[in-house]
Length: 369
Image (cartoon, rainbow, N blue to C red):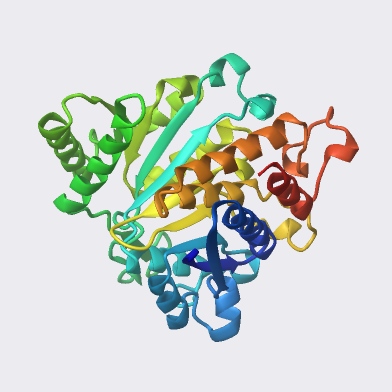
C-alpha cells in the first residue's frame, strides 16, 4: 500500500497561488517516482483570509495545519491590506500566529550559490565563491511577540506643548527558548562544517548578554567539538557582504534573523531562489524566503524555484526522503545549468527563448526528475 502524506497548502496572496501550484506539481512527480501519495488541501491565510472572513488565520486553517503531516506556504501580504490602524487585521499576523500555534521556534534558511547564477549576485565572484551557510533564526520570541502599546502622554510632552504619542515594543526571551535554538544550531553545525556564529547585540542589550551566556554554556558543555564565535549584529551585517563564505551556521534571535536572512539571501542574486523551513516539536512549515510580489501577480512570470526548493526541504526534514530531496535539488541545478531562467534571474545574455514563465519552469524541473 502506498504511503500517504497529508499536506496543508496555504497559497496566500499575490503570486502565492501560482507558485504553490508548481510545488504541488513537483510533489506529484516525486510521489509517482517514489511510490508515495501527497494529498494536498488548500486553505486560507493572510490577505485572502481577511477578505473571506476578516481573520488572517481562520480556525479552520489552524485545524487543518495541525491535522496535516506538513504545511506548505506560498506567501502573504500586499499593499491592499497595508494600514497603520493597530486594530485592523494584517496578513502577516496570520503567519506569526500559525508559527506560534504550531510551536515553530526554529527557522532554517540555507544560503547556497547555484553555479549557473553566480553572475547574478551583486558581489564579485571571488567574494561569493564557496558560500554555503545555514541561518538558524529563533522564531517565536523577541520583539515580534513581546508586549507592545501606543498611547498619548499628558499635555506638554509634545514639541508644541500638546499631548504627544508614545509607543513601545518589548524584547523578551526566556532561558529555555535560547537553549533550544542553540541546540538546533549546534546540531546543524555538527552535520556541516562544525562552526557556529552566534549573532547578538551584547554590548547594548540585556537579552543579548543572556543569549550569549546561554549559547556559550550549551556549546561548552554539550558541543565541545563545534567552534563557536560571537558576532555583534552590526558587524555580522557587514561581514555577510565582506566575507560570506566564512560563515557556516549563523544563529540569532527573531528580529536580527529576519533582517540578516534577507541580506544573506541577496548574496545569491535573487530571493526567488531561497527556501526556508520552520521547525518545532510537531508539524513543520515550509515556505519561500520571498514575499508575495503583488506587482507581478497573475502574470504567470513569477519564479517558482524557491517554492520548489521548499518542497525539497519538506521531503528532507518532515518525511526523511533524502534521496527524493537530492533529486529535486539536482533537477533544479540541471535546469539552471542548461540556461533556463525566469525573468527575475535572466540577464542580458539570456536568449529570449530560454526565459520561461512560472508553469513552464515547473515543467522543466518535473521533466528532469
